[in-house]
Image 1 (cartoon, one colour):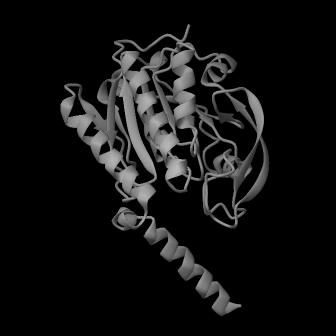
Image 2: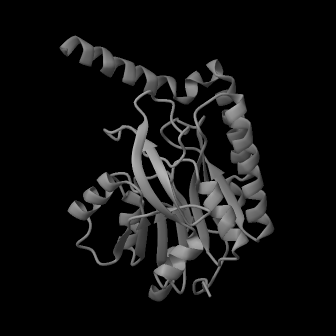
Length: 275
């Protein structure tokens, strides 16, 4: 049993290392993703904006600095995805934001209630964000070594199972249910569906000052990767058409062959209205 555990642990470590960028040349779909990211990092470089930017400590994310200077009533964030850490959200709280978190996983709910629920500016909603209001199954491994996703094909791990049912809502519904009058920031780390949430928010004509999101693709070959690449490029195009300035930038942990980090923002002097 001890030997089996050691072998299992070594396999998991090897698998994690192989997913880093330096091994991307061995996998055509990952080569494609790294090449796309390099193109996006150059075209949508943070160096090209004249707006002052602010890097959120202990995270990979960048936001326009003016968000931290908004009036108190305008400092509201909707955040999709929790999964046992919330450095981004903690930082916003320390800067006077109210943060509404949307999370599908009961284990993450419990972690939040044990560690963060004492703060009244931190509001947990036990549902996820999507482009439809619906009930859905969600998938992951029972030990939560990977973040759960509503996409059954998002992970390639043999331990992935159906973890149960969850409720999903659109950003428009989330805003309405929580009586949010102004929404400065939407941050999405929701395992493969961030692009759908952003696109639906644009279709619903929601006034959001800034989107920060990690666009992640299902693990797989070229057939799985290509539709994701088109969806990512189309979403960026829609953001630009709606007047957003878009930034794309790398993850520091060198897992850039599965995800693309983006920040898209407009300038509002006193915060956007959701009405």
